[in-house]
Length: 196
Image: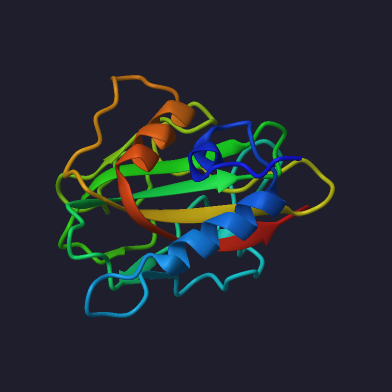
């Protein structure tokens, strides 16, 4: 099988977890801002490679979580970053599944609080917007895979060259993710797992 390009990483329903988990961190580690450390994403409620706690799990379709988006913090973005975007993607769902898409996070912001992904977005910084996820709702939709093997969830943070991502109103999650990727100058991620 031929290696896929970085641009293909953001196509929904195009990639399994093995390739995504190998390529995205390698690209992120290579994106070093001038005069500083690595562009890095952390969450006080999640451990890289660890299991998603119940607070962040979906609350429908047989899942009984609280459906809170996790707190996120980041450091050392590229100086040229004009905004940030956060995308959460399940690479093990058949065809892939977008759980959260947040765009237009202002360049001076370095954190999102727990629960920022509620439908009204009250916890988001001014100017940031959420779009429709693959559950069909606006905001965060936590993990809720079918019973069976655990799925991998990629929390992707992009530093963007533009203050706003240009996407048509009502665009599907995969098209929004592709637009984010086209504007990205650096990226970093946390990968976590959840099964039931």
